[in-house]
Image 1 (cartoon, rainbow, N blue to C red):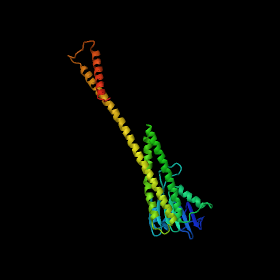
Image 2: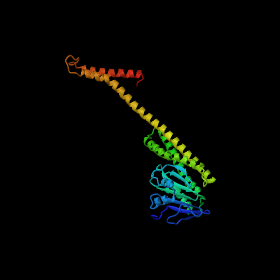
Image 3: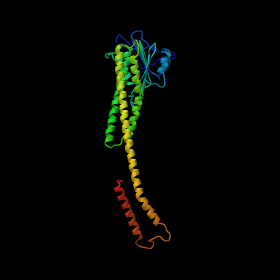
Image 4: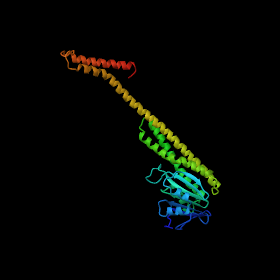
Length: 320
């Protein structure tokens, strides 16, 4: 043993009551009831403890640098990797936080890199003698999942409200480019993890696991369905933003085309005038009106007449 383990939370649940675990190097299972250990992957002793007490495959999954939502099952237990929105102060909610779990018949081990409010809720429930206590490790995991999905739904609905606001601003002719790009990035980041999480929860609910009882399965199916709704909402918002982006692109293209058309008309008007003024501007013998005092006025009048004729021509053909 390299050093003592420093869990963020450690409880034994026996006969509906939770009591803290004070063992400096606890086993992942309780001699009675079940045990929940919540660990910080960066804390001293965590990696040594995980490597020493969990199966090799599970230990690698819980200590992986990069994770995605998954649910895989072994004879000894299940590996569940989840993601939750980041509700920490000063953080972006779409910077989703991973939670790595090892679920066994008589224990639940959760490992995190950053704080998750859903785990804090379970810790608070176990520390409060008056609060109801999850009766099984699967029920404790389900309670965490409920907190994760509930917050994802809240964020998804908030994004939908922001999309509604952008659509209203766009209809009123306001500028939406900056907020549009920001919302698109946030939805893409959330959809990246919420989709696989829905699949992982559905797989977990359908898995043939002896220690996953009927109430836990029913709850997991409900939260998998809630995750599916969040995915659908995110995809709908993504499509609505794509429509807004297309409208914005079309508006910009129309503005550019209009400006180009105006410049083309101006060029068409001044092209003959420029040719005429250039022709009469050459300083060679034989140019008419070189000595006539009315020559400049005549040239100006001719330019005005040509410009007027071109204007009438463009209006007749509805080019202006």
